[in-house]
Image 1: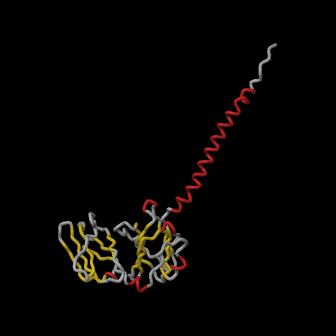
Image 2: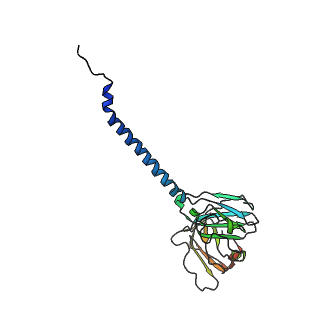
Image 3: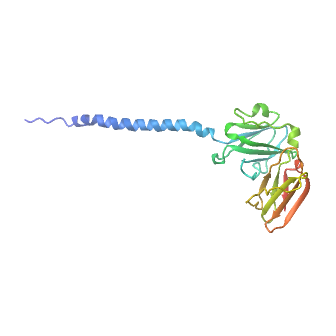
Length: 236
C-alpha cells in the first residue's frame, strides 16, 4: 500500500513566508503609530487657543482677538455678556489663523487695553489685571503683561465703525500736530457696512483728526478727537 504524506504538513512549509508577511504588517503599523506620537506634540504646540483671565477688579464688557496682520478687530466675542472679575473666557482660535494675535479688551468703565503681536501658541492663559505678572503662563511672549494704568489710559487706538448704508473706501487718521493726512489706512480694501477697522496708533498722542471717504466720493471729517477717551468711533 502506497503511503501519502499527511496533508497537514503543507502549511508548515509555508509558515516562514506567512510569518514574514505578518511581521512586516506589524512593523509597519508600529512605525505609523510612532510617527503619529511624534507629530502630536508639534501640532499641539501650534494651537493658538488660550484662556483669557480677568483679574482687573472689574468686569470686562468686550473682547476682540484677530491675527496681527488683519486690519479688522472683528466682532465682540463676549457679545451681550460680561466677563466678571476672577473669571476666565476660553478663546478657541483655528490653527490656520497663525500664532501671532492681537488682543483687545474693554472694561466696564470704557477703558480699553490691548496686547499686540502675542505668540498665543506659547501660552495657556493671558491675564488682564493685577495678577498678570504671575499668571501669564509659561512661555508668555514679551509684552504679554498688562501695561500700567497710566499707559493703558493713554492708548489712542480705537475701532472705526461703519454703521452707514454704504462702504467706506478711504480712512485717514493723523495727529493734530501733523499737517498732512498721510496714507489711506484701507489701502486697496473697503470697509463694508457693519464692519470695524482697527486704527492702531502709538501710545501717548491722544488728539487726532479722522477723515473718511464714502464710496460715492463724499468725505466726512472729525477734528480734534480725543481717541484715548473712546473705544469706537462710529460713522453713519
